[in-house]
Image 1 (tube, rainbow, N blue to C red):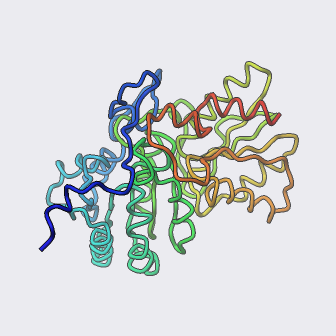
Image 2 (cartoon, helix red, strand yellow; image 1 turned 90 degrees about the horizontal axis):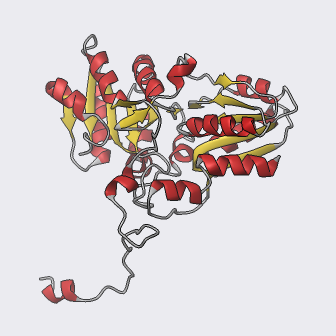
Length: 348
């Protein structure tokens, strides 16, 4: 029998403290889990969930699975519309992935959702052996990518792209905004192989719509051109560098923004062609560790292509990150608009 007194003994470990704001008050939950600062932007509620419901109207093969996180991956919208095609697998990501593989073998197109940390770390071997090796059409859609939560390393998937892009057969996506999430969800449903897609959930800013953007699987696209700096960005960092480009323009710095939503397979041809135009500082920007993500993929691709240009990376550090309010953390780790703008000015 377990000694009940154990529960009363002091732990030798120091517990994590509750994050506080500058005035010493406790941070609110919303400050720690809000996906992005959408001030001044139009937002779209749950673009992934609504796109999946729309797909399911004409496709009986679409099914949804979650590991007890339907509300937090926007899959609850699909579950309400199609309860007979929704599978709640509980807090067991490996079981969810195995079930998704089985459904795919029977002719279904499963969308399996969880947090990015749980899919990339906890269920990696199941994805590799049950799905990727068999090249099954399972779509793994994961919320809280990179630094989109303030709850510390247990929830911050700062290494998921590095982990997942190393897996053969797996397409890896990092969409920017509501427009792209909606479009990408529809496109990957038709893709014959497995996909890992990062997800911004809840009320997601809509940025690319004003540029007439159309998602193309495997393709990088120029959002705006410029003569001095070439930003090569993915995910919500494309929003950030677009804002930084506007600020830098006021200082006489002309920035191009090349958006790269497909990390694997990487559109080497477009990236190399734009970088080779010369005269521009190439800056990669990603919501991911500096190790193993977009920046290193682009740098290696340029070297293999024989394109030699000034090159810098904006990324999260190779470290376990702090807990706290996202605006503070984004400033601290160099991925806020202010930080991006300051970095480019310093490099120039």
